[in-house]
Amino acid sequence: QVQLVESGGGLVQAGGSLRLSCAASGTIFRLNDMGWYRQAPGEQRELVARITVGGSTNYADSVKGRFTISRDNAKNTVYLQMNSLKSSDTSVYYCNVHINTGLFRGMDYWGKGTLVTVSS
Image 1 (tube, rainbow, N blue to C red):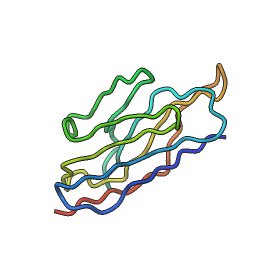
Image 2: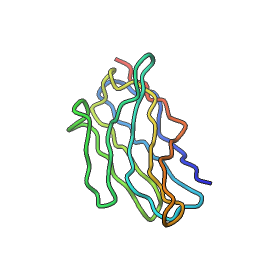
Image 3: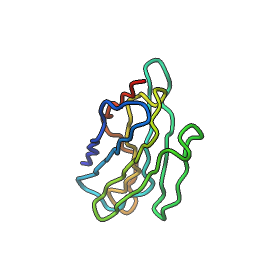
Image 4: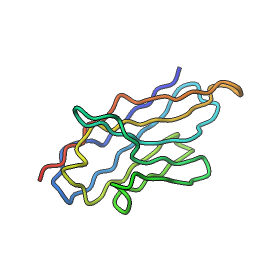
């Protein structure tokens, strides 16, 4: 059994910052790629940022230069530092982690989401 628990969402003014955290717990053999997605009302879920085991990152064009993804493997945690927030960043943010629960058993897990609201 694996759980992902997100935290750090909330209400912030445009131009402000927030840091999201997502901690994985349970039967974890190995954490693989970790990422953040977001979904606004009436929109499809979209990739915000991902980070590999080796630390390579990729970002959606809309957040490049403003958001930074990082991970702490000792804490099984992935972070998303969000700066210069815009009203268009308002969304529910979901953590996504590919986890091996055994040597040959791996799958994607999702958090329940955390709401980020940016007021203009």
